[in-house]
Image: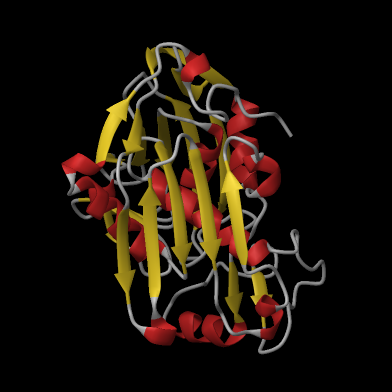
Length: 307
């Protein structure tokens, strides 16, 4: 049986929120089979659980935000991406503020936290959502067009193309495809950092956003070049971060996908719209398990390699 996964022990991190600048403590705890991933706002007078789902996403401006009533957690996509990359099914995320800490701006710190806690197999079958026919969402026209698509595929792969019309970005790789069956998430995707432009950062800060952002947790560019003295971690780090984000956004579905995701200039809003479009067509997907893990697609049966 291909089994569900949780952590062997709890692990903690302290950081600041990218947009709020608030200090936040994060505790990742094991959870029972079929719990799913549940964020818990433990700073509130009465702690509030926010289970992940496509419908729990209530804001997609600049990041993915999930809510339950008035309780919110912002910027969940990097942690969710790490959970997707390592195949974590069940997890409690205790958080002391309304934004996940940005840490180094990538998913690698979350991968390290999860792997240092240890990953445990559970006595329950891992459930996948297998896409049976193509589903697509589009927005805009001409130069403003963007789209995202899910197609049937015996595994999980993601292809993304960016178009920023900026010299520093244009000089790097514009398209990447990553396949869970042949690549290493920890090595190939997890280290790609979020990025922004100085003109946008100044505007966001004037509006009380990006208060925790800086050169230690983001790639920052002026009109011409990357300002970080250590340069880029990958020669296509920008588009790889978009794949990292997409993996986190899509994992908010609550189950891993068996599908091929392809996108052009997509973002948090379109990714969530794609999930909702998929779920609205019951003939487009099914839930599957694997009684024999040898029958599962490559990349899912093996525990992720340590660093």
